[in-house]
Image: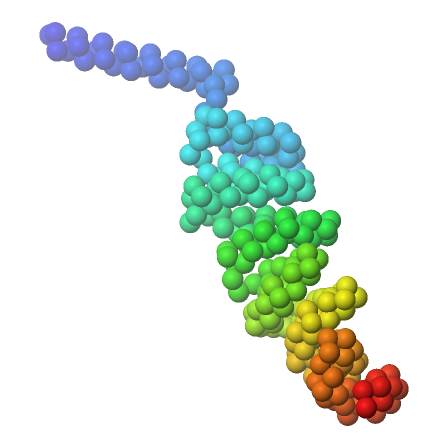
Length: 259
């Protein structure tokens, strides 16, 4: 009889606890799951500031919820807040590197942030983010193109050349070929304008190697070689320009000055 009474008391106690929990839920008692769902709904509605508040609350309730970091990163990406997007995406990656959409979100945040820094002339930050992006996406030519452009902006010409070369190697469908060529040419011309002819030469040599039918490219290379003091190499570059297009008075004048 006492055993039955004990069981009855236990059942009543369990029902009381369940009732209290249900009452708390009905009154809006927060759980990480419930707040997460609210945040996801707000994100879907593009209410990013409100969604951010929810996802931050999720992490207060349960700091292991890596998906909240993913959504925080996405919210900040949508708002153009690249530093916070990258930091939250990095936390998601550190917590759950194999989690669904974690790597993709981190990569997107890095690429977006690096591109924004490049456009605003923050070359050091751009380089850092592009390098980290390349580690995640080593076969994506966009990373190498961006890194090369950032290195040019920072005046790091040897590093820029290396990045562009790797960009060509990973541009399997040629989608970025013209941008990579422009990067080489722009870098060479910038170095030449800055009086750094010896830094300009390797970039322009790679430029004509990648585009060997470009007579104007060989003329530009010839100028850089002359400025760098490589007269015999300049003769070869300018001679090649005339072979490609005999109607090049600039090349003829430059050659006449060398002889």
